[in-house]
Image 1: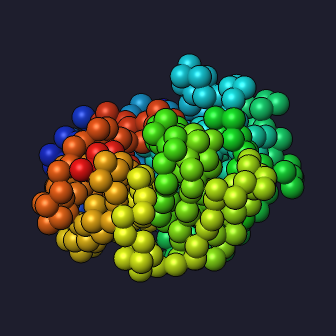
Image 2 (image 1 turned 180 degrees about the vertical axis):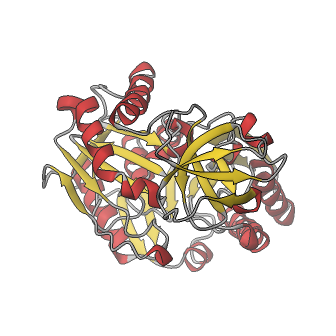
Amino acid sequence: MTENYKNIYLKRGKQESLLRFHPWIFSGAIHHADIDIQEGDVVRVITADGDFVAVGHYQVGTISVRVLSFRDIAIDHAFWVSRLQAALDMRRGIGLADNQRGDTYRLVHGEGDNLPGLIIDCYGHTAVMQAHSVGMHMCREHICEALAQVMGDRISSVYYKSEGTLPFKADLGEENGFIFGQTSDNVAVENGLKFLIDWRRGQKTGFFIDQRENRALLERYAKDKSVLNMFCYTGGFSAYAMRGGAKLVHSVDSSAKAIDLTNQNVALNFPGDDRHEAFCDDAFKFMDANDDKYDLIVLDPPAFAKHRGALRNALKGYTRLNVKGLERIKRGGILFTFSCSQVVTKDQFRAAVFTAAAQTGRKVRILHQLHQPADHPINIYHPEGEYLKGLVLYVE
């Protein structure tokens, strides 16, 4: 029993989604709350009939409570240890943790690991922790302590990187930095390839781990091909294409910093190899200037829609981008195309690509339908956790 936590009371009938174990409580479902509840507090959720239904973090906004447990328990050190141990056990069980060919994986994926609002990525002996809720930010030291206990000698430092992911209005004064240990070693290994991880200034936690399996798939198709990696960021797909035996690899990004990082990562694995060249340019301008040049094109843009209000324009954007890729690729070429927008469903993305194919009039076959890897699990009770969609297309 957790009587020291304050209570939030639901409107009648609004507990139904919680009885199906959905981990979010929206503001419209709340009837009233105890006084003086602060943002980030752990609260108990009570039905209109007075029954306990969940315990979680309170936050001002559309999602008022992110559920930590459907049992009436204390959110204490034992809780954090238990959840983090379960997350590690799963990664060990699927062969990602303690793997000789790679030390890069996601340890905690928010709702997918029953810890909504928390991301932890492991790069070698450094864990990068990111809070997406005020509650997780408030608990960061407790989580870090439990993390160090669970991981043991697997990690020697924890970098906290939440400046860009917490609500601005909360005015938390958060700063990025090490909260356990220190290190200057920022080289991580993925499937035997080395990558420099910019956890200080990079996007997300410094690297897009979620494309690991899709990069490996591209490697299988790269032999003797001319490859264009559009929106290359850190050059992950480029390095895999190089190892796969591509005859040339061109990496394109509108960010000069991304181009520098891509060049460094390619040089780290293939020093002095002149098959690779990187260009700081606009995606559409570059593809217009390079028609019928590439056998394999990767379109992995940043999220076009971060909220439902942007969905319609996002779908138009995906169609426009894929029209360009499908128009410019060589006959018999292979196109890897992705969406990482959570609000875009896989059916909507596929429809946008279908529209693009129809506009070009080319014969197009789907070879693979791709999604996020196993260390980015989807809680079966939280389908919103499926965010990465991809198609591999054969284009005549």
